[in-house]
Image (cartoon, rainbow, N blue to C red; front, side, top):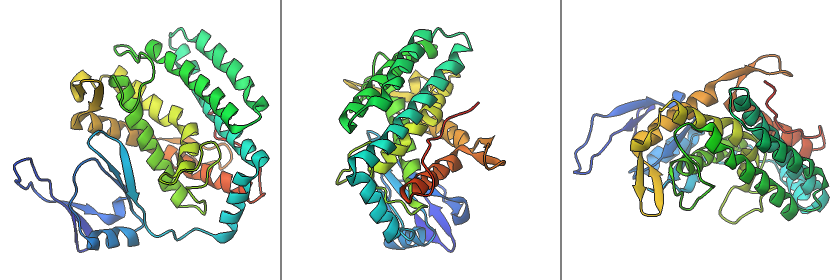
Length: 322
């Protein structure tokens, strides 16, 4: 990849070293780039991308997220960073925000189950159990206890996947490495959602390394993990149900190895296409009174969290209302 005037010039290279026909990508049409293979680029390209505010997210061969190139943090503000840190250091304030993340995630999970219940799936027992677990969230006294409730909700929810999917079985959650096709798609989709949230956080004054539900790590943007919890049911899981039930992704699109399943290039392209279509779908926002995309909803979530941290408005997580 190189810079060509005010466009990106991208040339594919096959295994034998033969170059393909150059593709020119207008910089105005790019918000972020995902790199799932080897990429040769020089500093001029990254200077160009940095000035345009475009991030690049890197993944290794096994689809593990390895890092990001992020443009200069031009929106970070001292007051926000101080208040964000105070809310993390205060056990009570941190727990308030963390509970909201889990409540939002649980609500959207139940909406998914209700959607498929109305389409003939027998999911009542899963919904009832998750309802009971959700009632426990408010009584959680610390983050580990809250994480335990969240984990139980997810475990129950993933048990419903075998009833929602037509021709694939999940057979329990497995990761690092995923052991079947459904788990491979969940791991891949969750990484896509994580990087989406990271991109949207970057466009606010929030610091992505200061989080509330997940513990801040030295080498991860843990606030993106927090916000992704709310949107994974809506963006990732619904996309997985679509691509598998409509056979947009099939068994031939997976590379099945010993104790490991990963997506082939064809599977990645099909999932990313469906994921992008989902992000670009619009809904009529009840407060803004205008149509906004799912992608923009993530940015709005960051703004709501910012207002809470600055003591402007109490934070309420996004809950799907249709």
